[in-house]
Length: 358
Image (tube, rainbow, N blue to C red):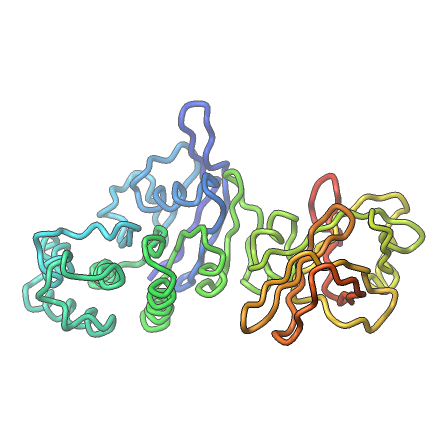
């Protein structure tokens, strides 16, 4: 096992800068997920760590070694790809043991490592089959097993679940979590799926346009986003946003509604009158009215019953908001009512910079 350090890591293709001098330290045994929209630089960053992509600037260190000039096979890493990358003419056993054979590991030890990994992943009964005889989930387990037998210092996962259906994604995600708990090896995992990031990571690194937007535990990035981008990216349904203006100790929305800043920011420095802000509220933080100063008048536009709860969509001025309510709550479309907001759960962002207001 080993720590990983990225020091001002940079990647450009000609004049196009993909990764913009990022700094990141990953502790020994930590599970870190790089997440962000397409084109944010997450897979390019992972491939630079793996040695599959040249580095334009900065350093990658694994353990106490700077590995910029080392070939992938010299970095003591193992990578699991989106498309499995299995040899179709080899059996599962042969696929899992191939890298050990190339490295000159004795046949007895190689077989023992393959059996151990197959038992860990629940694929011992598949060892004599070929990839074409396996389901997508089974093939991904074989790809994981091939990585495990190498006993690397660092595992790298590049969107390993994106080719699986929803049910299989959940199953294999659980296997990856169990794998980390059993082995304790450092894992760097790339995904565009924020649910994967939230359920797997010790820490999440949210990338945007080649820069790191925020690094934190799942709880930190969910409950304390430092920008509108992070608040809207993490969470399903996404955080609600509505524009408002500060006036006389209240937030004034274009709908005419007001929320009391004195209630939500008690004990903190007041905001200047006339300041334009973006108000962020997660769907689950709406509820019954307990304080008239912390309630909005809404008109229901769409109702989505989900079984475990109900999503109610409504407008506040020109902004569409969503509330997560109990499954028994089924208001009629067009119904008007007052809905409360938890003052401790409201996030305020500057309207110009879209960064959080402390």
